[in-house]
Length: 138
Image (cartoon, rainbow, N blue to C red; front, side):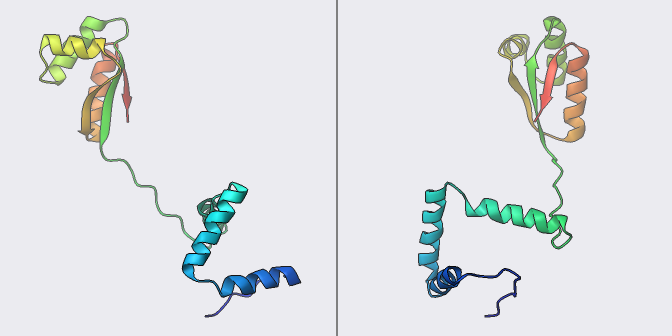
């Protein structure tokens, strides 16, 4: 197994620790990491993500592209001042009856549609906001 050369000068104490770690099994190393995390209140994964981010910033590692969201949940946050208009618009957008639409508006915040495409979610949001509702896309 090759080791990377580093410019860090190790003290006698650090060399002793390195030699001890080299002789440990994977299970012993896992237990050691857990004990160090518990003792010092840190997480090894956080150090790795910081190192990866630093490497990406330095140009060494390319960060994975952020995946664009394809499905949305349309949530009615509030009906605003024109509750009747929102109920009417909600009925035209969904197959809800008058009572169901009124109950949904009264119980806001409530989910109107789950798994909507971006275009569909934007259309619903625009129509309900025009009627006076406050809408959130998640």
